Structure formats: structure tokens, C-alpha cells
Length: 259
RNA sequence: GACUCAAUGUCUGU
Image 1 (cartoon, rainbow, N blue to C red):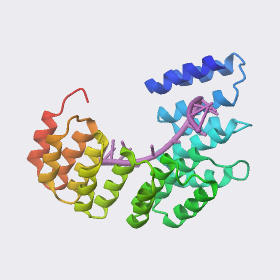
Image 2 (cartoon, rainbow, N blue to C red):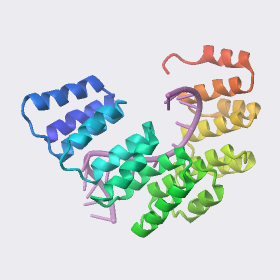
Image 3 (tube, chains in turn red, cyan):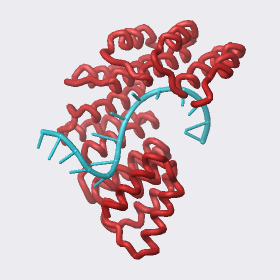
Image 4 (cartoon, rainbow, N blue to C red):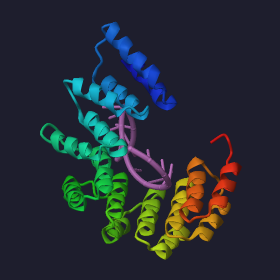
């Protein structure tokens, strides 16, 4: 059983869908009876390889599901859609089992994507009842939900109440302020944040671009210590969104092949 | 308290 889990974790790391399917088939052919851990890892492998549908088939066949099984499917729908399905599963699971911090951080992005502020606030209440309000990952997911729902007051409250803010907390706030057009406040956070990673730079660049500040976006793009494929795409579309076609073309030609 | 098979932020598209 743990051999299967290790194998599947290799598939997850390599995003190897065919290999995951092969292992799945192999289990069936040999009459191996996977336990709940193997099923969960198999479903996760399918999700990470981009096939939520295959993960769902595994999930539906499981006769025993634990909180991990539910949480992984909820997160999968939150990330890949349909987002409604994440909320439906979240409701369903509670007929059988208690959600935990993984479940809550998995379901929040669906509320954010759907801009379902009321629903998000209801789950926030539930998070408080379960005592997860101060949990770092859950708080990040919560403030991001409020930011995506254009409710920066509540996002800020969560942010200010956190005992430990990490790079995710700061970046989610920056994105929220940028999307509401509060460019100066976003920039203030960017300057104040204790550490930045490539995602924080990318988010700020994209935010400037969406608000028409191409010059600032270019400045950050040139200043940033590392660029990834998201940085290049963000900068190319920064030019595109603001009607600077030759800039977009020039960057496209400069973009390293390795991305 | 920590860990486990599952969780949160950035571009484009869906």
C-alpha cells in the first residue's frame, strides 16, 4: 500500500497522467484492494495531472471516505471548476463528517471565484465556531475570499488580526487592492512586506497593468530578481491591455525559450 | 505541541 502511495507521489511530482492511469489499471488487474490512503493519493494524482473527472470517478467509487477525500475533491473543484461543485460537496460532506482546516482553506477560493460574499461569510462563521480563525492558511484563504468579493474592509480585518502574516497574506491583499483600483494602498503593502517572492512581484505588475500604469509595471519587471513564465505573460499582456503592440512583440521575442 | 493520504496568493485561457 505504501509502495503504491510512493509511486503515485512520483506521478504527482512529474505530472504524469499516463503513468498514474497505468498504476490505477495495474491495481485493478492484480486484484489489489486499495485502502483509503491509496485512493486519496490516486485521486490527488489525477487532479494534479489535470484530470478532475478521473479523480471524481475514483471518489465516487470509494465506499469509505475520510476528511482528506472530501477536502481534496473540494480543493480540486475550487481550483479547476466548476466552482459550484466545490460548494455542493462541502454541503454534502457535512452529512457524514466534520470539515477541518484543509476543508475550509479548500472551499474558500470557490466562494471568491463565484463572488459569493454571503456564502463566504457563512463559512467564516463556521470557521470561528471550529476555532480555525487564527490558523495561518485558513486566514489567508479567508482574506483572499473577501478580497475577491471586493470586500477589502473584511479582508483587512482578517489581515490585521493575523498573528503571522506570510507572503501569501500580503500578496492576496495587494491583488485585492489592485482589483479595487486602490493602487497606492497596494503599492504601500508591496513596499512594506518583509519578504517577496516571484508571485508578489507578478501580482503587483499585473495590478499596475490592469490600472493602466504601464510605466510602473515595466519598472518592477526590470527590477525583479527572478522572472518566471507568469512574469513574462503578465508583462506581455500589460502592453497588450494598454494598446502597446510593439512593446508586447518585443518582449515576446526576448522571452527565454526555457519557459 | 509537531507530523501523516488532502489545504491558501500571482499572468493568460477554460
